[in-house]
Each structure stands twice: as C-alpha cells, then as structure tokens.
Image (spheres, rainbow over the protein chains, first blue to last red):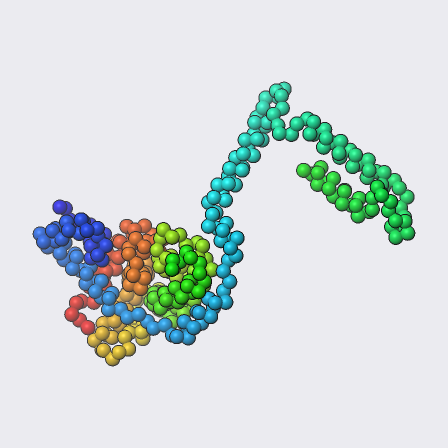
Length: 178
Length: 177
C-alpha cells in the first residue's frame, strides 16, 4: 500500500475513515515510520483541542433567548407550503410558459399568406370589435344628452350615470391597451 | 422530535439546547462574549424563523452552525482590523490570552493552563483553519458536515484540518500543562 495522503490521515485520526480503509491504514502504520509520525501529530492536535473548555453561557442570555423565541412569529402555513414546494411551483410556471410559447410561436413563425393559426378565431375577433363599437355608440349617446344634476333628475333604466361612463371608459381603454 | 415537525415549543427547546455550543463557537470566533451572545441569539432566531430552509438530508446541527458561522464572518468583516478578531498567524498572544477568561474555573491550574494555551494557540491559526477545528469541537460535526457548514469542498476542509491540527500539536506539546 502506498502512503495515504494528508486528508486521509485526518479522517483516520478523527475516526471517520471507513472500516475497511481503516484496517488497511492500521496495517500500513505498522510498517511506515513517516506515516506513524504523521498520524501521531494529528492525534496530538486533536487531543489538544479536547482540552478546550466551553465558555459558559450566562443564564440571563438563555432566558432572553427563550423570551425572544416565544415572541417570534413563524411564517404562515401558506408561505411554508409554497417555499417547501418552490421547485414544483417553478416547474409548473415553466410548464405554463412553455404551453404559452407553444400556442403563440407557431402563429408568429407562419409564412405570409398561409392560413392563420391562432386560438383567437375571426368570429371571436369580430364579436369583440362589435362589442367595442356598441360601447362607443353608447358612450357617444350618453355624452350627447343634456347634462342635469343627478339629484334632480333620477336616472331612468338604461341611462348611464357619469360614474358608469367613467368606469366604461376605463374598461374600454384597458381593452384597447391590451 | 425531528426538526421538521414544526412544533414551535419543541423547536424552541431544541434551539435552546444548542445555545451553549453555538455560543461557544461564536465566542471563539469573535473573541467577545457580548457579541457572541448577540450573534447566538440572532442565529437562533434566524433558524427559528427560517426552518423551512432546512433540508432534512443534511444535519440540522450543520445547518444551524452554518448560520452561526456566517453571522460571525459578517461581523468580523465589518470590524476594523483588530488583533482580537483577526487572529492571523503571528498575532500578539497577549491579546488572545484574554480568551483564557473562559478556562475551567475549577481551580485545576494544570487544566486551566492547558486550556489557556490551547485557546492562545487557536488564536494564532488562520481564521478559516480555526473555524474548521471549532466546528469540529463545538459542533461535534463530521468533516463532511463541516464542509456543509462552511460552504467549502470537503477536500479543502480536510486540508485546513490537517494544517491546523499539525500546528496545534506543535504548539501544545504533549505532557506540557
């Protein structure tokens, strides 16, 4: 057996060498003065370390620790749930992204003139446009009406209040932005 | 109980049971009892709050000591260079001798002296080498767990241990008090 290296001797001296390896090293030690000195040096170092005394921790510090721990909130269960499964969540996100890309990329890559491949059909698009056009018409009709204080002229069924119009404009704007 | 059971009371008890060893390690690393106490509390609170970060495949102890080591490293990094916390080779032993305040108080002078000498010798080791030996002693960690705690490869940890143990053996000859 060739001489074990330094790190193997550390594991040997610390009692962490696997049993088979340890036996081989024991046998080697019997025949190798240099390795015997090496192992003895390391054992001396470990023995010196064993002379170290643990500094005493003040009882007040332990009491303070207990008190701080008892006042410390743990993370809510839902956070724990997601943190523990963060890889699964990440994998699900990647899957969804890939699914999205699968749906979108072919339509971007299609040759000009070829039939459109999309989840949004023409009929769907026309429906959307008709809805927007109807909204614009209603908005125009509402703004053409003579304005009067809402308190003196209660809104009839089908009439839009200013708030409703504002909300509708917001929605319309959001749709157009999208 | 296992650390993963998340029973707050049991976790609290578990952490408190580790407090003296974590404090011991921190005290040897930073050289100040007040700082070591603060860092120990911080390490425990972080472990308590962040238990979900603990992976059951590793030792809970290694994970806890890693938190403590990182806190000590951060603290040391923030300090202006002082001999008591940057105990590089050749540091003034009179400074590190102050660590002897925690030698055994039992009146056994031989044991006390030997403990003081070991403390002083540890103070002369490069910080990263000292860290490995202290994790071995206070954490009672196997070298593979020390590698986890320090974030270094096992080969590096073993090389540090080899160098540090040899030096310690030379500085504290056997049979001397």
